[in-house]
Amino acid sequence: MPAVVSSSLVREWALRALSGLGDARAEIDALNVFPVPDGDTGTNLYLTMESACAAVDACWAEEPGDPVTDKAARAMSLGALMGARGNSGVILSQILRGTSDVLGGLADGEPLDGAAVQRLLTRAADLGYEAVARPVEGTILTVARAAADSAAAVVQTGVTDAAVVVEAAAQGARDALAQTPTMLEALRLAGVVDAGGRGLVVVLEALAEAVTGVRRTGAEVGLHAPLPRPVETEAAHHYGGPAYEVMFLLEADDDRVPALRSELDGLGDSLVVVGGDRLWNVHVHVDDAGAAIEAAMAAGRPYRLRITHLDLVVSPTASLDGRALVAVSRGPGVAALLGSVGVVLVPAVARQRPSTAELLDAVRLSHAAEVIVLPSDKDTRGVAEVAAEQARADGIRVSVIPTRSIVQSLAAVAVHDPSARFDDDVVAMTRAAGATRYAAVTVASRAALTTVGPCDVGDILGLVDGDIVVVGSDVGSVTRDILTRMLAIGGELVTLVLGVDADRDLSEDLPEWLAERYPLTEVVVYDGGQPLWPIIMGVE
Image (tube, rainbow, N blue to C red; front, side):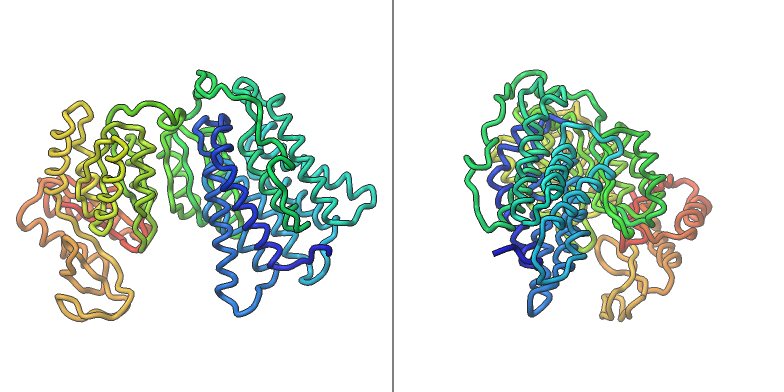
């Protein structure tokens, strides 16, 4: 029976793609040499597709019956956008967006014809190329275009059967993949096909299986034995590009994105910007991570920030060496600051702590023999300890400094000495963190009875060392009240980390007030950009 346009078809495709990428993940990781030989393309594509599948599954959980095709297709696209990992993952999310644009315009219950398959593949390839600032042939983009062109060639002969068209597209993708070493010197030198392109072949094979209902074996789809790869050669692992990979989601008006794209393109390479309707996913390789984040903050609100030091990941088999810092960060400003001094970051989102897996991945990603972890939150300390215990089983020496706020983590990083003995460094950083009292101001989200009296929704809460000590109606006055209490017993340094909702009273007037009232106290201000907390303070 011919395939029918339905949300079930979208779901079947997503699940088959996830399964296929899971089976091929290790193989694709082993192929990864361009643009960075970091051996994680298969993993990134799998995680991107996993996020897409979770979003599609959520459609069924929200409704008693099957959702409409348009809703399922857009959920798959949005899920991929939100969870995209790495250069290829971001491009894959844009390819899925292209397919969802066409699928969403088809009538539920009608037969899927070859022309529709050709249109969705063409739209996918077009959006993929548009997303990349400087497209390179011999990559996932080449494979996407070849699939669309092969589908178009069959449709032009008068074929209307969707199964025939999608099979031709998958074969065209496989043929193009086999040619990628002739298009890209890095692939030829390593003796491999393109990793991202190999992943897209898996996704297209999954589409063919969903349309035809026929599951093929590895021998039938081919290319499970690519050109031999000299994995330990210098050419396979050499990387001479920008130092950092920067990724983030961005809430911004669509008309602000072209200027951001232009600025980021001037800062580095491998720039991919995907999305629309005020939600974007940005990936770029740069030497100045701070400048990239500042550009993003000028365009809108960046979050889920990831900064990876590429020199640390280009050789997955390298022996462990040196010492690294791993810190949990909330807000792009502080993340950029820590990333600029080489701290490996674990980004956290509002009201959600990082997982053990995320912290463990960061420790392993550092490729250091000694690692110091800064949880920056009392609720994250337990997770950090579990991750540290697992890392120790891998032969890594790990210590967790129980920082309960980002200002304590900043204080610890400030005294970090990589040349000191590990134990001495940990002691010095622990002392600096412990000598820093921390405070913060937030807005009450519900009515409650606090230790200083009742509060209503919208009241301003002031916390010192995690305890509510002030309930007021104005952020500025509550902040001054807290600082007066903390500085009553003295203080040499005040650190102010401003949130995304901080106004002029905090950013300009407050430092002036401190300078006038406490002239012997040094004041440092950081634009943290964190949500929920207009200001976080530290007093040393």
